[in-house]
Length: 268
Image (cartoon, rainbow, N blue to C red; front, top):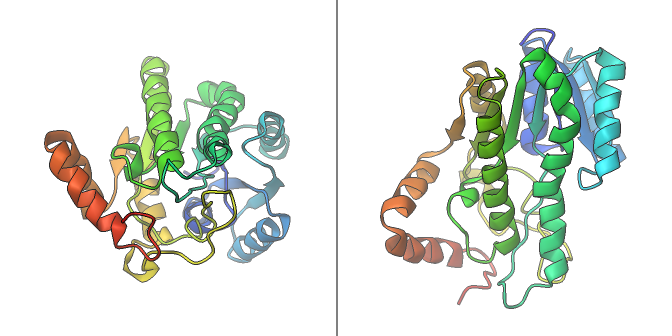
């Protein structure tokens, strides 16, 4: 990965920031994006202090033109793009019968259309350099989670897009990977949208019992080196995908039980 140019959307915190650290530590040149300029600048300064060649670019992935300008900025700074990691994402928590549909549109705009926009504008360079397109999906893209309508729907759509792209790139030597973390420590649940679009605030889950963002990033880095097609993380995640394929009815009951134990769960 030495001297490879890596773009990471949503790189100010969590998995995105951890990915910037591990790729940068191994010699890659990094461009991270984020909507919050103060968080973005703080992440850049912290990682630069650790000797990482990194720049920040203020962008909202749900805006097509921001993605076009992001790709242009990477080429201006580094002269090329080798790897795009579509990491930016948002979640939500509300029953479908209660949720404002605008909340689901917002989640889809970031988690799905944001990936399409970023990939569209980075792909010409990635094709030229026979690089990688990586999508940070979720176990929720294989198994629908109750009270996560928008999130699961966006990740199912993302998995479909990446599968299509991977097949189209088969003879063009471009690596496409779908990375599916299980529950991982990050700010995503604190910034989760509620039924009316307001922020959830506190995480409803015990963050201390989850895989760390740093461990997750290490797995993704190693899988990128091996040019893996699909990466499913955590024992719980692998078991859920397997069980859902062969015993979907039982999985419905088990998933409902687990999700109903969350603090202030909308499930009865």
